[in-house]
Image (cartoon, rainbow over all chains, first blue to last red; front, side, top):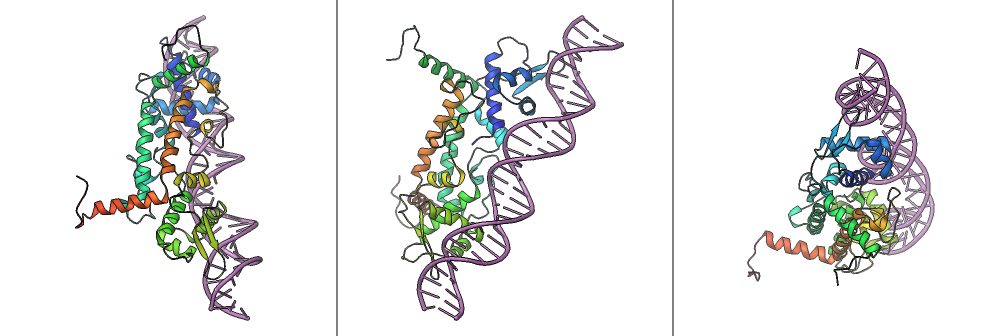
Length: 156
Length: 156
DNA sequence: TTAATTCCTATAAATTCGATAGAAATTATA
DNA sequence: TATAATTTCTATCGAATTTATAGGAATTAA
């Protein structure tokens, strides 16, 4: 399971991607209220995102947060790594934070490692594809499926 | 990351699958020593595996543990679920232990949920395929690749 | 009866998670 | 220049989880 921090972060980012039509930054309290995130907790999260170069901020009155990159450049894999650490399920199959399993006999021939290596690769691929842009696209699609509107369906 | 419990469990199971040529059960201490697992900790793990119907045991002198199912019927997904709970990364995309995200507005149109649903499906598929038999097969393959023996290579 | 084992219950230290409190620094604007 | 609204920083805290360990009861072969 991902942590609440990561979940809150993704929700906040999607909100910012959606709402940021104008150029004005959006305040913490507005995001917190809209996304049902504890105010003070969100504060720390946004700060981390800013220090990671994903968000920018303006201080003082009329201050707030806004995306530092385009929604297509921000992906879930990076957010998860920032708050929860490696995506891999075993320390011996991470790229960045590799650590040997102390109980392991021979890593090179470990069948367990081989399995979890495949899982990591597949998962990272999927989560890298999951950008804010992609997430918004999916919501849109789901909404259109939900209420079959008056527009002609192109599919099928 | 999976817990040490799960990692130890998988290692112990693979060991049992490999070693259990004869019919005699294998003792906790032997597994613990061979796989570098704290004795008392392993005790609890094996008990859980037994209660889950994956291992059987014999008590008293000459007692020990052995597989209750064939290596092809024991998969990593089940082991992970037993010790670490759901494989899904969000509570709203598990099959067995579904729980609504309290901060969520509309689950049916949630783009985040859609992404994590895909990830869960793919991961579960891979981990179900990862049986003890499959893990042993992979080790064998890796060993053959490591020391290119005298046998003719069939591949390429 | 003894020795060797699994089984059971209780506990404990260390770490992580989710969150809050309070005040300092910054900035627009009246 | 003063004020109000905001981000930023530091510190702390309780609860849950993880990773074990201790000690003895129950079981069984010899």
